[in-house]
Image (cartoon, rainbow, N blue to C red; front, top):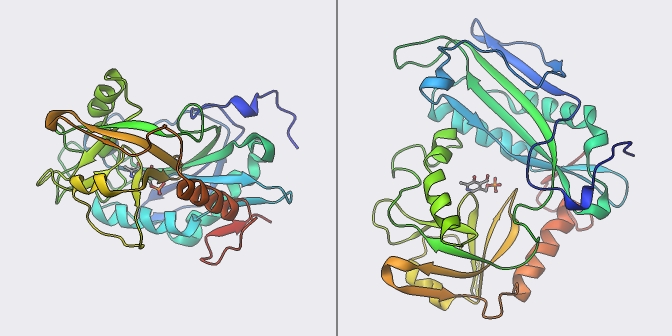
Length: 312
Ligand SMILES: Cc1ncc(COP(=O)(O)O)c(C=O)c1O
């Protein structure tokens, strides 16, 4: 177990240094060997494409210290595949699933003492980052890249943990263009969301809520998380904003958000407030979903989809 003096139960969703990160360089048309580093900074050329033209991609996943003493990583292969898709989207060299997974497992093992104890409810956030490092002034893909994975222990995404949060529809900014980079996990999408997020916080909301950029008619995303609504049957489809009225429960979900229930979504410009939880408490189905998801992540529920990697 850990010899660190960390208040695990009160961790924020923030950065804390750990012992090691792992790196791999793409040069002369090929990925090199995996390198282990204890350096927190990276030294890159001032004309690197990631700095000027946003040629960068990232991922986010978590490792958990479980009740049975094992360490589990959630949906590692799916993250590798999404990174490959991002690479295709912004012309970066793809990293194989095998190499991605090897590096993830290595960095988690190397930083084992930073994986929060089971009882704390905190976890180890894993942040893979792929950047164009080759010098370039014209708008072209780089010829050199760096893939880094670092880890940091994190607490809940929203302060206060599992309770329902208020959201506000932001109509004046688009998260991403319809045929743009919204389907890829690139930093530029997040730079584009900062103003909307600040506006939501300034107005006293937990988070901003996006509608589709083209028609402002359908739900897009719940800030930097996916959206779910509870009705009778399970389906994955576009949801017109007005349909919020008919939902029994709603929430944000994802690696960081886990399952974060939504209490209300205010559409200020339309003078409309969609109240989802009258008492502000999470609904019973959201609670069930939360328990189920956490159960799978911690190895307490069967892993029927093959989502979990047990570290050996
Ligand atoms: C914009 C956005 N949507 C959705 C998600 C949720 O994705 P995932 O389920 O992979 O965590 C994230 C997570 O970072 C995100 O940034």
